[in-house]
Length: 278
Image 1: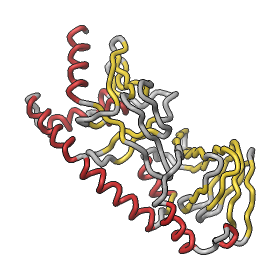
Image 2 (image 1 turned 180 degrees about the horizontal axis):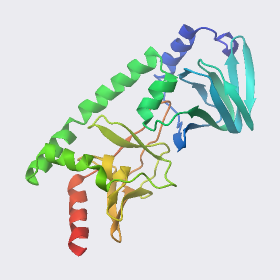
Image 3 (image 1 turned 180 degrees about the vertical axis):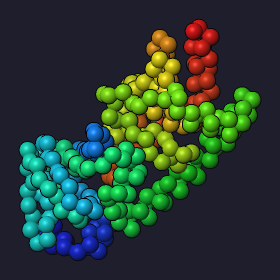
């Protein structure tokens, strides 16, 4: 099928189903917020064939760098940076000619990413079924982590209800400081919300602060427990930071990437040490 012949939604969805069975490339999605503004920034590598989710509404598009050949009915148009334009509702299929950074700009005060995607994006049935299957697989794989968490809570003399109340207490929570757009809070296959990274992170790299002046950032609030964690908390004076123990995958082909996890036993020990020296 030639790109110029892709016209119908069912043809795009057939292509999407085939592409979802293939290895996915890094496709970092970074979320920016301002007063009444949400910007969704995507980075696309040259040589990538990309199918976007359908946009529900007209919205502002800003192409910061690069160029993409976009299918529009029977035509193939080249979108080249720098460019600002109002995009129409619907799906885009494109071949990335040069490394591209593309922003979708929306008017809203909402900051929950899952809710924002429901508001502005119409994900195909094919993609949703793929995503649901992946979530179920991840949930099943994480069963041992959930059981280990229960044992940890019991051994510490707490109940899960008390732990949840402490975790949800907003009095000691602060937003993620500026300078860490890589950190994303999304629905977790382990429990509730979890931490994901837009860009991949290498072993030994700093992910960000988890506790500053006794206040928890989203890293300190939403990072879930695992028996085989890919990150850990470290001391930085009286503060706590998170460091990657292994290479951690970021967004790939529309998926959220690998969830960031820590070992709560190590975390509790670290917090106890800091509190004893306070």
